[in-house]
Length: 536
Ligand SMILES: Nc1ncnc2c1ncn2[C@@H]1O[C@H](COP(=O)(O)OP(=O)(O)OP(=O)(O)O)[C@@H](O)[C@H]1O
Image 1 (cartoon, helix red, strand yellow):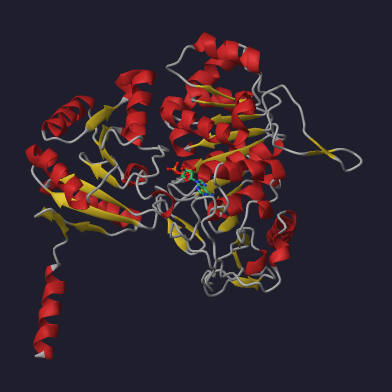
Image 2 (spheres, rainbow, N blue to C red):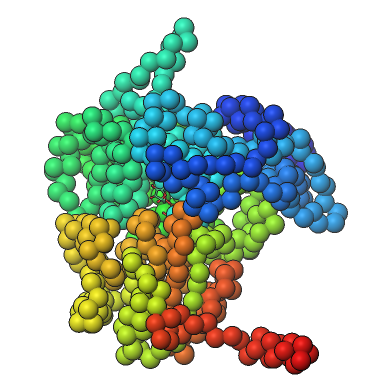
């Protein structure tokens, strides 16, 4: 019986994927065109190749499906099959995979939206967008997990705009396409911080254009609530983006009607599941759409078990969408380390959460010399946009004072600043007026300053999940970047622990004579010397 259920699930999934390829027009790629793509810079925009993304597909992904203990684990990767387990070679070819997309058009997005994307200089979808967009358009509830800076925001914004607002196309009974007009909220996006919510709003406004940008509204804390309620009444937005507290507050006051909502997005979902947001999230989940009718999208670079559990209970047959694979969340065991397509997702869910181009270092110093080390680090790496993380606001202010005294343009960003102060500092940082932004956990999630080339931990993050989100402020969308943790001898074991959990190499380094120096490990030195001796 179990096997029967699983097998039918398998076919259902294969069917779904076929539909995905058909709906996105990807089947048209099945002409042996090959997958060596030459993306060019158009309109001065970034292409994937120019950003260092791999744009050809290798033999790693050849459409193998594995059935383990009567559980279906569909995957595009060539996972190793353990003895005694049934292996099914699926008929899926790489050509049919939903991520094999060169353009947004192939993903089934409407022409007006494509025009908006082109105006914004966006021509080629990232891997996670290529996978997530057709999956969401096919009415699936999803958990999107992909490393920081890989374009997860558009991965859910685009399917929403394909169905909500002026950029969508609606088919009439005679097949003619019309713009749909609705006046109630159709999509709610929840983010854990004001900065992130405002950033998402700007991304949506950019696509909607100046005339229609009022169709999205931010509902964030720290801003005047009655003004937000007035704007809701006047503008009748179709999409609202907000922080949990303010969304729940306005919803309780009866000024935000979301029962007919079709999309509920939880960005940085693992953070939204934290204790602080529990009550507000409860209200939002109960009042935004109906489980059977709304599409639930959960997003984060780090997906711990709590997210898997929440997705199972709040969603309907949710799928796990990653950059190059779609998996059924049902196939993820409920406890212990979960193995997904051969890679192990640690209990903290940090695997594959870091941009591959990022370089990680740690530098030993005494506590009282940390600021000097930071200064030498910035100069040695010739970093232009630096985000330095600390854990306490008072010490953070001292650090800014000391950096300024050493001639470095620095500014502080933390919760005490208030909404206006925070956005002014961010503007200055993005505009290059401030070189080192000293901040706390507030900026660790979602903050997108594309040019950020250096992240420094002046205080250690609490764990590897926090490390991953802090680190991910640099090296966005395939750009180069470094993460330097400045710590004391007694803290090295924590760095080593995070290194293991993250599955990346964090090398010890020094800053000497204006350069970053990575000392050669003793055993490597010995090896080098013995090779030299042999050569002599
Ligand atoms: N297809 C694309 N082409 C070019 N740029 C893109 C594309 N998609 C997204 N971007 C840009 O890449 C940057 C990173 O995207 P985004 O903030 O969505 O990443 P993310 O995966 O959500 O990161 P995080 O996990 O840190 O929140 C943004 O500046 C965004 O505008």
